[in-house]
Amino acid sequence: MRKLYKIKQTYSIEEVAERLSLTLGEPVGESEVLRLMADSELGIFWRLHHVCLRPYRDDGMDETWDRSGIFRVSTELDADAKLWAQRLAAGIEDDDYIRYEGTVLVDSEGIEWELMQLTRDKSSLIWDRRYPKRQEIIVTKSELDRFESQFSANDASAAKDETADVSSRSRDTFQKQIAALALALAAKHSKYKRGEAPNANQIAAAIDEILGELPDANTHGLSSATIRANIKAGIDLLNG
Image 1: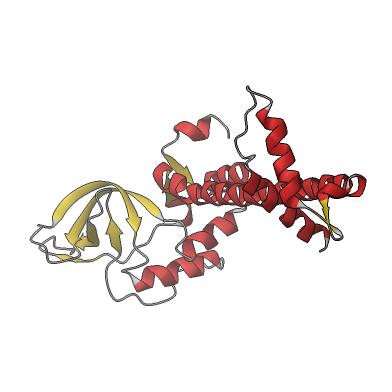
Image 2: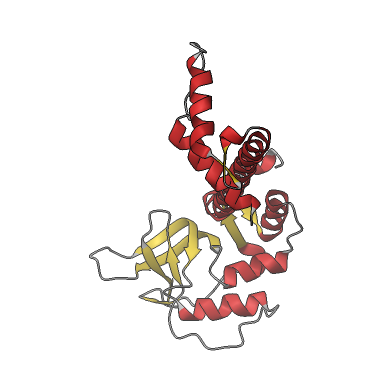
């Protein structure tokens, strides 16, 4: 990733597309970023200056008449915002539909507000039904980090599954090799043969005897029971 993207705190739609293209290793266009926003996969943020806000919920907080900062547009609480985001993703940037309430915003502390504006005579507040213009939309670094983290988790899970699959294949190969050696031994010495199959008990006993003559041998995983089990499992694998 470009070093600049590691220190930036906010990104335009174009910059989000560039960063995701680098992160995912495949081209990501601005239209795809807007679609992620419309699908609520990626938050929509708006930098506002000196605006009037009123608490969305009746939690005892007072309205504020002069607030600045970065806010997330709530498409969960504001149904009109969801429709606006979907229209924006479809390439429609006009305001050719009716909104009945003020825009719902969420601040950095997770507090929900309604965007308000003063009446012409500045005597009271009324709903402000604006949404950001396309060029005003930004995404915070923390939001992009959150979104990208799911791909890291998926990659880690896939790597774990692949490792487990390789481990399983390696075990099967190992057991078939043991079975092949047991078959070869049984073919050469009838002592290690029972009927048409290797005598796993005799082979395991012979291995235990040989290992007993090696005082410094690491015999972990070489118990008679384990050897017998691997011979049987290998024979079953060879027989399909």
